[in-house]
Image (cartoon, rainbow, N blue to C red; front, side):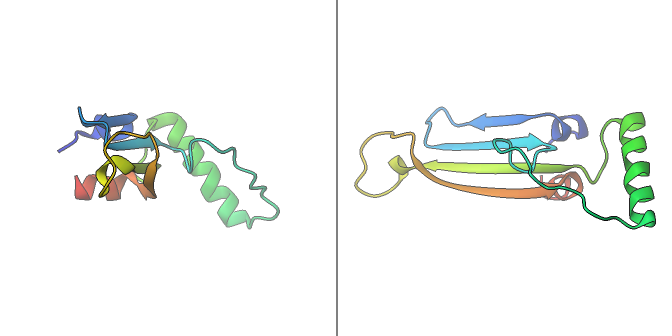
Length: 105
């Protein structure tokens, strides 16, 4: 089980056998692509809520609803008929809040 601090820090875990890699990126929707979202309109209540969260984030650092991207990569080596590592394969990307990650770890 991970401690709270470990959940909030970047986690990169790989077997000695490089066939499977699990990576967790804190506060990144997808760590390799810059977001192109632009806020067009926002209610005053939502704006106040967002600003209060930013203030709490400044004060506390990490919040229970911070988001994390979890990527699980499986090298094609693990599939039938492949005899060596390729650095290519299948990956699964999930985005979850810290409170969800803590509940399953």
